[in-house]
Image (cartoon, rainbow, N blue to C red; front, side, top):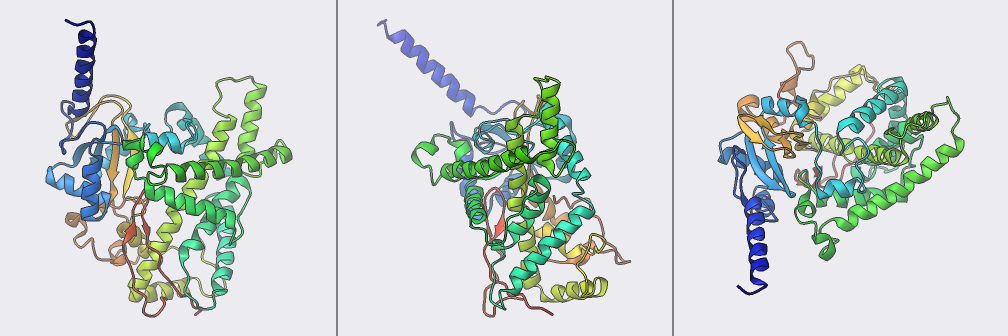
Length: 462
């Protein structure tokens, strides 16, 4: 045998074994389509999503095709399962072995190459930092009177902007996101963007581009990370890296300003509370502390991204439903007028939320949720899930289940109102005026989150 023949043969055998490992379906893994080396099911799911209109509809179709509430795929380089029924979704969201977070390439980019923050981390860091954030926000009044006052301030500023439109068509995506972000940033960093701030608009435009390029499975960049070298724009790599640079520079400046003006014992916001914990760890020479400079930066990053789209998109969907259903709009207006009047803003106590609840059931900002990672070999619905399997939950399938809702495609707020006029809770609900002649486009722009396509709306005082 020639000298190079044996090493070459071993290399070919090793490559064949590696390829077989990528193609092989683990024993007991949930049913689903065959996947391919390197790209897994990415292209098949993408094509199915285009045909059906969205990724969540593609996942629902696969659950029906394979007659299973759990479907097994390989997406973003990871074994991935999609869960579609309430009982199994509740299992995923409550069992400790499902508390991990994905470690794909998108998560690596999104977290600046760091396992920090609270959104895409797990274990001791997540437990300690999540408890800290919840505790501090409560003490700052995030869910109480201080929160209500801050929301009222932003509502008044928003009304001023809308009144200046003088009856001209307005696109809500330009004005809602700053208002929502300002509420969060006030508690996080003691700062608010003025309406019309161009720096904020640049950040939101980049965030929008970034969101469209990815999905809950990580998008094409997680499936094929090498695309960043040959398609930096089309793959979303340029958008996410530029967004990261701008957001980090913005918060680094705010953090430095806080350090320069910080007075121990005077907690103005979340950053001050974090600086106090950093100082305490330094004094105690605690080298294992999770209160570090990089953790503070990623915490601010998480707070910003949490408010950049989800809430404002939910509100845009709600306004769109009011436009599509003027009869409901009139009833909502009458209820607000009767309960609140014209002399004050609504408060948290004014709560007929059926129209908003029904809007959130039908119009999903996050139709695929969860984004969990299995921390150890586990079972779910008799199927075996190897350690590090990514688990996604299909909330859309749950909210559009005809067996439960009867007519899920119909906007009917009454389904959430009891016979006595109270808001009805439903265990299958798991959310987390127009210019004349304008077409009401109810389609969405898909990506990491769903957003309604831009539409014109005219606000009139009455």
